[in-house]
Image (cartoon, rainbow, N blue to C red; front, side, top):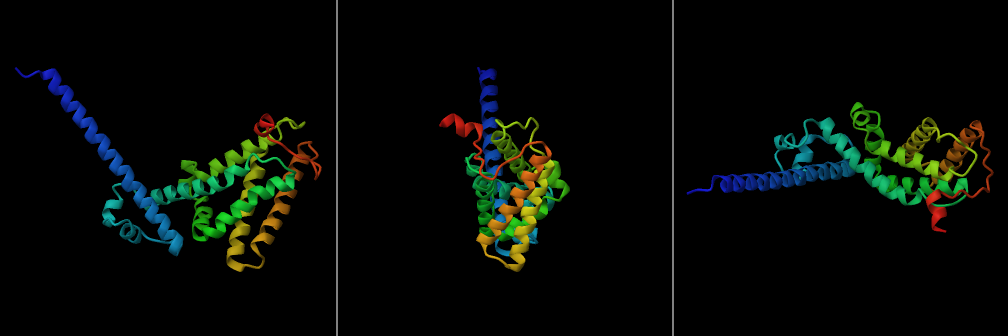
Length: 233
């Protein structure tokens, strides 16, 4: 006599394995489309269409919509990818002791270097920051802002400053950095090193002024050490 309970378990296990396999295949194809979009933007700029992306991914254009409901959704995922790569480059410098100039330069230099290596992708990311999709999803640059704010909090944890770093100022600084890099792409009126130096001076001036407004005077030669770095010494 057929053991109905065992048959049901076998069917349920088979269905689960099939669903898991299909989910993995769907995730892999979704990642393939995102990578194709990234490659297309890197090569030709941010105006690439779905047809070109589908061709690069090796799938029919209608199949792209099985994984992304719209071009806006795909753009948001590409922006997430780009922001993650930029954050990966910057993150190792978020806990390095130094003077204000050394710390800021340590963040600006890898950001500019990544942008110089990926100019089209950087333009795309900077443009996408203003879209509703990016704000709804709270994507990469918001994560970057959050990590920078956390790093600033760690650097300032043993100073007399009792309030959190002003995120509005950090947002403005990030906008200034983005705009300056894009201007540099278009005009190349200074070297990459000069751009880093200029942005470092400007960002330090803004941050030092913001801290002074909050009651904390930061001498040029003050060495700031984040809590994590201090605990390792």
